[in-house]
Image 1 (cartoon, rainbow, N blue to C red):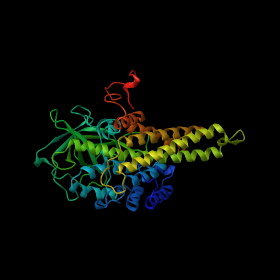
Image 2: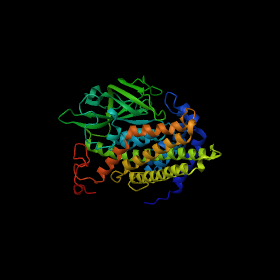
Image 3: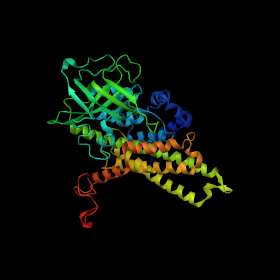
Length: 451
C-alpha cells in the first residue's frame, strides 16, 4: 500500500474543506437540521454539481468522477469535520454501490448518472434496524434478517404482468416490475427525502425463502419533491426523532407498494448477500473516515480551549494531567485515521479505479469502523468534560460531536460486535468458538483456542 495521497486526492480534500468552512458552521448545521429535509438542499446541490461529491466512487461511464472508495472516504472525513447533515452516506456509500453491483444496464444508465449529478438521492432500507447485519458488519448476512416470513419485516410478492405499473417518460415508475412490497422499516438514513429506495425484502415463502433487493421510486411522476404524501400508492414515510439530528432517519411503511427487482432474472440471493457485504466495507470505511474527521475537529477545538481557559492563574492546558489526556486522545485518533484509510484502500481492491465494490480483506471494514467509533466517543466525551460548564450547553457545538458518536454506534455497532465479526472473518477462532450459539471462550482450556 502506498500511504501517500496523490495531488488529485489532496485537491479534493482542500477544495471541500474550504467550501464547508465557509458554508457549514455550527449555527448553519443547527439551522439545517430543523428544515423538513434535515439538511441544506442548496449546499447539497452545490456539493453535487460543483464537486461531484455523490459520484466520486462511480465510473465515468455512468456520470461519475471515476475515483474510488479512498476518495469517497476523504470526502467523508471533511464532511465529518463539520458534522455535515447530508444524504452523502446514504446515496454514495449505501445505495450507489448496490446499483452498480447488481443493477441491470437499464437500471444503471437510468439512475446512476442522476445520482452522480445530485438530481436524485437514494438510500438503503433494511427492516428491523438490521442495517449492520445486512451489511455483514456485525454478523453473517445469510440469515432471515429481512423478515424471514415473520411479522416485522418486508415481504415481496409477484403480481401478474398486466398488474405491473406502466413506465413513465421520466422513469418515475418501475417498468413492468411485477412486484409488490408489504411491511415496514425504521432507522432508514434519509428515508423521508430519498428519491430512490433500495429495499431489502423477503420472498419465496418458507420453501424457497430468500432475501432480494428491490427498487422503489419514492417520487411519482409529476411530484416535485418526496414527502409523506408523494403520490406513490401505499408508501408512507415519516421522519423519526433521533438523538443525532445531523443524521436524519425515517420510518417507512409499505402497503403493496409497486417495486422493481434490482437486477435481471428472478434474483440471486447469494449475489445479493455478497454485494451487501462488499457494500458494507465501503460504507464502513466512509463512516470510519467521517468519524475520524469529527474527532479531529473536536480534539482541535478542545486543545484551543484549554490553551485559553485560565484556572488558578494559568491555562488549564499547562497541567500535566490535561496534557496526558489529550495526548492519549491524539494517539487514538491517529490510529483510527490509519485504519480508516487502509479500509478505504482495501475496499477498492487496492486500486484507485473503481470496478464495483472491491474484494477487501476479511474484517477490515468492521475493525476500522470499531476503532474510529471508539476514538470519536472518547474524544467527544473528553471535549465535553474539558470545556467545563459551557460544554454541556446547547449553544456550544460539543454536543453535536457527542451525539454523532453515540448514534453512529447505535446504528452500526456496538463496537464489541464489530470487533467480534472482524475476528470471525479473519479466522481467529476455531469453529463454533465465540460465535452465537457456539462454545464460549470462557471455561475452555487454553490449548483449545488457537489464535
